[in-house]
Image 1: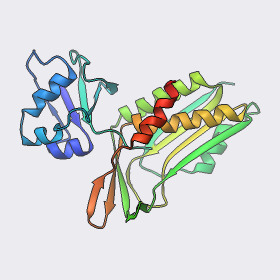
Image 2: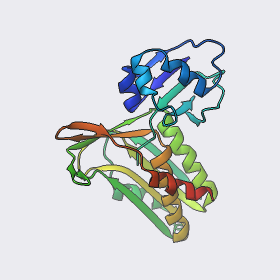
Image 3: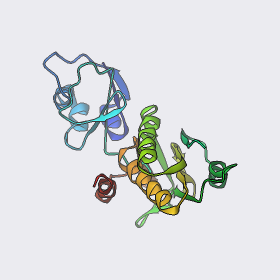
Amino acid sequence: MKVKYFAWVRERIGKAEETIEPPADVRTVSELIAWLTAQGEGYAYAFEKPKVIRTAIDQTHVQPDTAISGAREIAFFPPMTGG
Amino acid sequence: MTAIVTVRVQHEDFDTAAEIAALGKGRTDIGAIVSFSGLCRGNDHETPISALTLEHYPGMAEAEIMRHAEQAMARWPLQGLTVIHRFGRITPGENIVLVVTASSHRQAAFEAAEFLMDYLKTNAPFWKREETEDGGSWVEAKSHDDAAAARWTK
């Protein structure tokens, strides 16, 4: 699946997007965040406070317990500050 | 007449007066047009700001604003609405966002404009980065913005 990062999540990880293949036992958004956290220092820094991170699946906001199966694009980002 | 919903996400500036005029053009069923303009300030509390850079999530930004525009159309008797949100580097005094709502009577237009702005702040995927003398920093989300959006779910 394709993953996108925005704002300081993007800066801490050091890339705007990538394709990942998490193992089959990673089923929810919060499990995916936990898996990504273990992928390196930048990831650990970006996801150090997982409760702060917002997630969208296929460009719609989702919750931490949302299943990721069938997702084409998952995005992680800080709370929004537009308007 | 049919309601006209316009959502645009763009770097270019917009003409607030022209957008207001466009929403009411050729119609006699509109009795109230409310507009809100959000501008870039030159300071954040005491700190001078030389510019804001707005990052956005292309595709989702448009989709999320459209979802809230549709909610506003369903919730209030509106003749039309326009939302324009800019991205990229914006300097103090420039426009950032515009919400225009049109209705037969003022209450619906006022409420829908406020609803749209409250949700844009907390749900539209935009992130502001401030440029200051000592570099810059990401603007932190404010809890009073969450509270403002939450009151519409009551």
